[in-house]
Image (cartoon, rainbow, N blue to C red):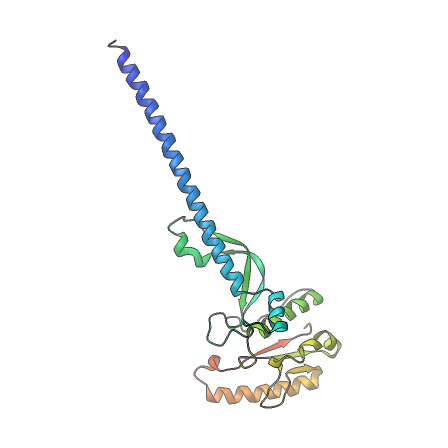
Length: 231
């Protein structure tokens, strides 16, 4: 009995430690599953916010056609002014860090979410690609500008070659291309019309520079000049 008792005690202690380890691992797996579910939940919420704030081309067209309440909702001074949707990709969930840091140290990604480009932060922007695809993409950006911003907030000046006029004619009547003060339509076809529109804009910019020399970026409306034909 004296020899058997230590063996039984050792076996019992080993079994107890194994059971405690199994219980510890079970609880930790449950915790990790909870963390994973929480990260997914917060990620989906952030993704839905991005989708709400960055409407698709179809949504923008619908706003224009049916004059939805969100038409021209962005104004100068807002964080998303002239922030345009380029497509949908997996993006870093930077806006989630305050929520995620307490859950995990590894960066998270939001799949199939809108990615944007701010024309305020990138005032000179180019579109590269084969001509037809690049033109369609550029037209989608103009549609977003027209749907998200009122013509009192943004003016668009479009310069195209005569050979490309027919592919851009649908944009000619956008109110964003009309200057109600000068009677000038900022839709220039060919060299002569481009010179006339450029001269009109130069006068406006010169006057604005004198009036708002300290903060020209706060002047309204904001002017966007677009070369619609390949360089």
